[in-house]
Length: 371
Ligand SMILES: [Zn+2]
Ligand SMILES: [Zn+2]
Image (cartoon, rainbow, N blue to C red; front, side, top):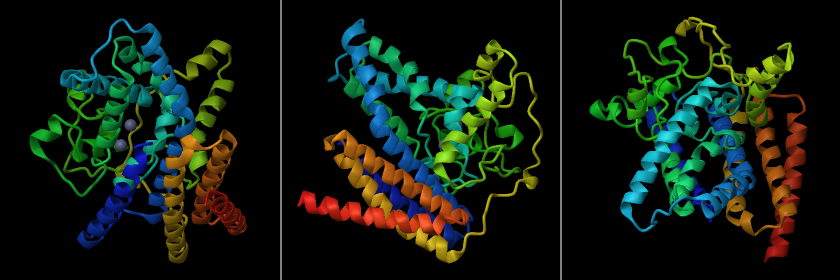
């Protein structure tokens, strides 16, 4: 069973709790269209993961089975501890490349495309990142880290990072200099000059201190979240693809095949280009002025969609591949429909109606054939 199935209810309850506490404290940390969009990115990431993981984890298992130079025992505690530290070390570099190389930034930018910072931001995950990042972890398979240990430490590293996406926990003293914490991860999500390309760690911020990318949060300059070239959309599919489109455009104009190829390995700001100064006061958060009624409708529909997605993730391994594809398609179109409604697109209401009818028929058909 996909362990995220068990985590989803915890995510939903903690997000509601954080939003309620923030509301009571008068902290403006949530925006409903932004949060729904973050959660839609999370849905797309999990649904695509059903298909991608078979491939990436499959290659890990194949490498372990056929190429490993030794075998580390899965029943020894030290193996788990060393594997977690090794995973976190590799994660630091994968994450760093995710900010410093166009090919990997095109995938990772999804996580930074929110202009808010709360627990829902943690779930704003890419759907395309695994292809470029998983080869970096294969040395663990070569060294004999069993797949069960690898899969578990990868999950621990990912789940650890959930709680650090909040403005409600301020500085934590020495912990901010040893572990990744809300304070140092806020810096990572900032677009202020001092925040760019800082604090890449997953569990340990020690890697950043070791490799010179650590910066403490400044009390005198509030962090402005998001990316320098804003997404300005609630469409999670476009959110996953827009930077790839930019890099493709740049590489087509590069002049030669070599230059085109190099574009993919340039830093996102351009090779040799100095970072432009950003006046934090000048940043306006994206909004389409979605009506209150539509925001509440989207929340209610998202609640329903979350239940459907949880159910899909639970039963996906047992589904025939055509059924799996059909479910995935309807879920992705549902997330897009909610995005279009929040953006107030002209065709959105008609599309939503078609989606509800399709979903209703599918659920009725499924209920009839399953019970
Ligand atoms: Zn990042
Ligand atoms: Zn983050």
